[in-house]
Length: 313
Image (cartoon, rainbow, N blue to C red; front, side, top):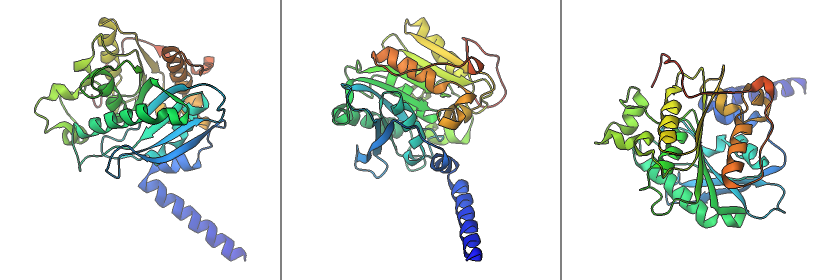
């Protein structure tokens, strides 16, 4: 009996190790405790015909409130990896603050290239607007949010009017976590593969379209991020501000590219007040309730400029 229990334990450890090697974030998502007061209310809702064109929906447990603000969260992964199944922790965290949250998958490189993942993002947002009322969300109060490549998708949808077509007034804000907004020339294998074949490189950059028609933006970055350098957030924040748009850049000391994402999870919020800052901004721009206290020991630096750091653009 003891040998059998030890064998089961070792098998579980091996399975966990294999799972981690295949998808570290998905394993993290499985193990990390989730926020109470929120749940996944719909899974695998199709917004298109491709198997990757599906989304999950999270909502607060309290259903007594009228239609709530909506967050569409796009995960990152260099445009070539990722799955919504790894972001339950993020959806639950945001929903616990009073928002209805949609987390879509989208098609990935190398099967597709720019602009297909932007087209998928736009299709997901259109689906959300048409259907989110069924889950307690307000289709006229939507905030686009994303991390890394997902922040690029969110920013393209928020700034370039061609993707959502016509009136974008329902997009009331943009929240970017460590997003690449101004990264030409392409100097990584991922960016070359995703964007290198597009004949007009400027059309791949959110900063190209940043003007007075864009929604308010909160651009969060880590001072130690060498994957997507903070200058991306600085450039977009400056351009939007100069165009008369309310934009704020927040730099978290000692935080890198992954820290800023996992700080959304319950155990790691001490790394940076990402959830508090994002929730406060979303509540402000949508007139919603959510939001939060900020602890003094995790206070961010709000800044418009950072010294150039070695690494990727």
